Amino acid sequence: MNTNGSQSKLEIPIGNSISKIQFAPHSNNLLISSWDTCLRLYDFDASVLRLESPSEFALLDCCFTDEDTVAFAAASDGFIRRYDLHSGIVDQVGNHDDIATCIGYSNETCLLITSGFDNKLLSWDVRTKKASSLSRSLDEEIESMSVSGFKVIVAIGASAHVFDLRNFDKPTLSMEPCSGTQLRCVSSIPYAEGFAAGSVDGRVALHVSNSSNLNDIGYAFRYHPKSKDGRHHLVSVNDIAFSPLVSGSFVTGNDEGYVSIWDARSTKRLIEFPKYSNRIASLSYNHSGQLLAVASSHTFREAKEKRVEPPQVFIHKVDDIDFGTSSG
Image (cartoon, rainbow, N blue to C red; front, side, top):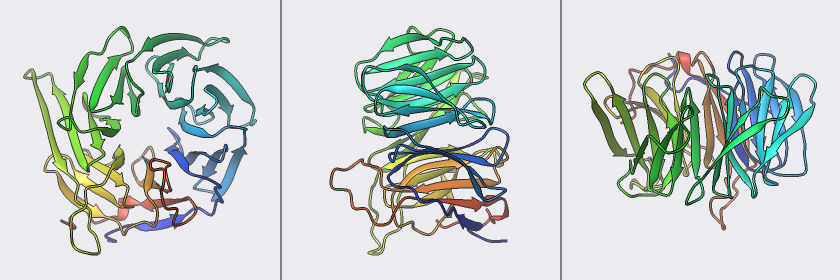
């Protein structure tokens, strides 16, 4: 077995920072949104770019619905747009009063959830011809958002808030998973009532609601990437994704360009991939958990961010990784 799995680099020229990558629900088609205004759909099985849809505004996030043929994107002009990935037709769903930043879709409710710099969390019913929205105003901007089932987890400052889409009035849970440290990303746990959060100082926190004994399980640990000088540098964890193939396994990507796969129960690092030349902007497993997509890209998080290489997307075949090998 191969410790790091086989890797493919997608030969797609992307003109500016990658904001999000996401595999389709039922295929190996990969959706890519970018600050170069383009939404792209790449067919990994056929090694071909199926769609490249440019616009006038930077795309800050994207998502699929429960179908492989429909996608949505959030743009810097505040508008939420629907993409028919077969025909290439683009429609406007609605808009925020400022830059639209995060987007996600709930299969269970058929609701599209979006956030923006207007400090609003919006819920759109995309089944109607004219999408309607429910609005919730928040105190600050949402840094990250994750939608799964009936739950929406948002990161605001150092706090994570969980909303139930069936009762959108107030959060069902609010907490500071990384002990007061600003959060960079949140990710729903697909097989449990809970979430993971990554902070700006390299911490990863997991919170699981255990309804069987009414006790919640939560812990945090620091992610110490390797470095050339042998020291541990605390850098932002930019994205977290849970494996559909190996229960209790998740992957993190950080600002130093490291991607690591972890065991959630032991907080042991199972695999650390060789360092990428850019920050890790986004991660995504395919529906079977056999493929892991990695977006290596500058992120516009820092004003003086050094751009080492153009944005690139890599795909690892992780089903042939020997998880018995640990990189400590």
